[in-house]
Image 1 (cartoon, rainbow, N blue to C red):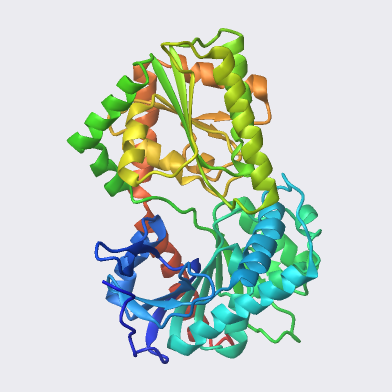
Image 2 (cartoon, rainbow, N blue to C red; image 1 turned 45 degrees about the horizontal axis):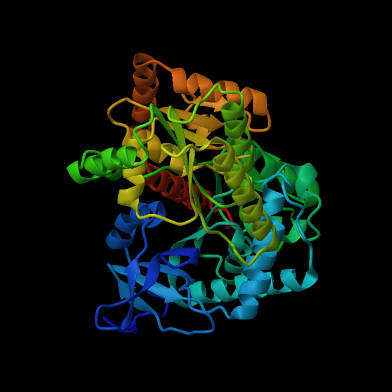
Length: 487
């Protein structure tokens, strides 16, 4: 299969349109040397595939090529509409405004955000490019679901051009408190961009509350409950509702894979290759300063130095997948983490046992499930995280009731999984105590906690997340039509 054959059916044809920074496909080289695409693994496409198949669905996003324009094409029953980005777009819109301005600002300013007008100008330009791609294909009265912080201006752009559209937006990362958001020079424009949606979804109730407070404080909007009303002189006259819609995982698939004999055998092999320690701890993160990897390593290193934990008895596997390697703060983080890894292994490893296995690479899902099964304790110590789906995957993989989840209070997952051992990652001594508690937890207590968390995940999977969001969006628009409101 080469580059997919274009689909000529594009003009105002699609009743359901998803808009995200990336298309749900990865570029591959086929056995015959030609270039093609395969569906990328991920909960979002899994959740939306049934909706796409049952309606005239399309997905708008960047295809991953630099300076390459592709025609629309179909892949696995999803119509894909590639949006081109060149090197300057990636530098200014993506690495610049999205990931060096918005990302740190929305994650509690763990790293100081940078504010550059050239970045903002390109962010506006690229958001308009995405919106224009939607406007070409959206059918009359289509439902459009926009995703994440890279595209926060798109809802308003769509609203002003096409008032007939039903527009939803979901933010996958946290939304900051007004005291932090106030730093942003373009705070009013971002808020008005989001308010173009009929429904804005967030991971946590606090995020939705932060957004509504910011609307009241920095724009002329008034709010009552979860609904924001624009001022009378606004170009947009739609009501905007803001609610928590915490995202989840494909629980059934994870649970099924956890029972696969080959994956179970691979988990046993991992334990054997590490010398069969009494306790294997696992961390799985993008190499990002929000994930608290340095705090985790500091606590673990001190437990080894204190001899509370000992080489041979315990091993930590730290998977740190590469992330934004051209951004300076990420390059600095990698250097710091690798220095800490070297210090811990140099001081505490023996010829027969390793205390820390550091893996700076990504792994396919089957291998990740094997790691989850091999691990006795998962350490999620994020300093700020919209949700953290790794925590949910670990729980879903342990249908046997074994294992302990150590989970940061500053993750959205902490709201859904209170049976985890909750930690404040800024409190190193407190985190050390919680890690020891997890290592020493008896099997009956592990099973009690795991069963309750698995019951929660079985009911609230990723399909329910997407269905609930789209049902609320439909309800809002039905109510608007019934009362004759101007949307």
